[in-house]
Image 1 (cartoon, rainbow, N blue to C red):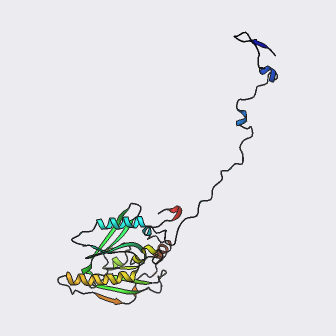
Image 2: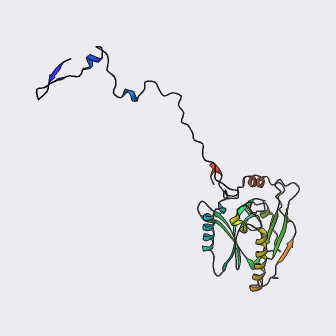
Image 3: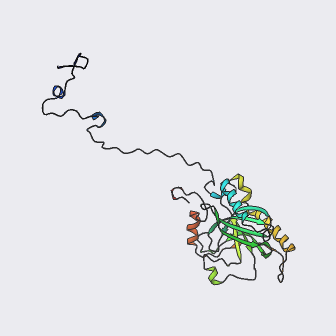
Length: 271
């Protein structure tokens, strides 16, 4: 081993060079070789963690039953009211409208002093996508009873229906009856929301029977306070089956099974 003299004059041993560790013609060890093994990383697949179970209760998938979203929807609807045309809000309800093609449409209903308002609310954009207003003194007939269908219908629902009619002398035209998007029908049909009786905090807002009682009372009051000229004022309440004329109903069957008319969480499919 060689000795070298430092600046101070002391002798110090010189560490062995590459010639002392490796044979001539051989390369020395690569720097940081222990961090990069020579064997390739084969057969490795990232592991997946099991997701936590969904924290849902019965009915919790419906957006309209979430307190914050429901409060926002009611606030947005209330801001659209006209004090002169509607008056003060008397009650708020969560119901389902059944179209003349037997398809479900989730509705937020407001009973005011002078009108009935039905809202289809967009819970993604947080705005009402459709608002339907019926003056209470225009309503002349209310039908209350079980659903009834033609024998060939594929989608026969159970339960009671409430049909509200505001022009008993006008029958829907042939084109309107066969148009699934027709909006000129002189009536609408309501039934209970599928989550009625599930969510305790809003159960009182989903009771169709209670809604019918308050509607009848307010319509009679509206007829007495603001009668329509040239019309026989008064409300006719009929307890009889409510007919839905869907003779096949394949489209309504698919829509009802998938609950496409409701705003709800659908897992990976989103809204």
